[in-house]
Image (cartoon, rainbow, N blue to C red):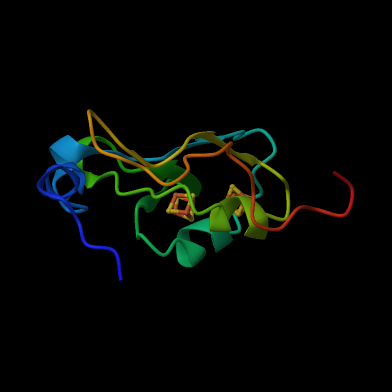
Length: 109
Ligand code: SF4
Ligand code: SF4
């Protein structure tokens, strides 16, 4: 089994250090939104709020979006778009940041 070098150990990010990560971000098309609240209930990071019958992403340090795409996948109105992926910042190594995409695409897309 391969061993980590000293440099490798320095480059391993700490997932709960907010200085070492960039959280994900979603954008809502509120004209399309039917206020079903499914996205808020589905979010595994509990980072969506339902305010005045419309969803919104928590801001600042409360934003813990990991860009999983679950809200995008569950929205019946296709009213949510992922705009920024969760990634480690600065000099930390990543396996693959890839392109943003929903985990399950709609039939019509
Ligand atoms: S992409 Fe995932 S973590 Fe981010 S708001 Fe949507 S469901 Fe929550
Ligand atoms: S799942 Fe879609 S339609 Fe339902 S509240 Fe969220 S954005 Fe609005």
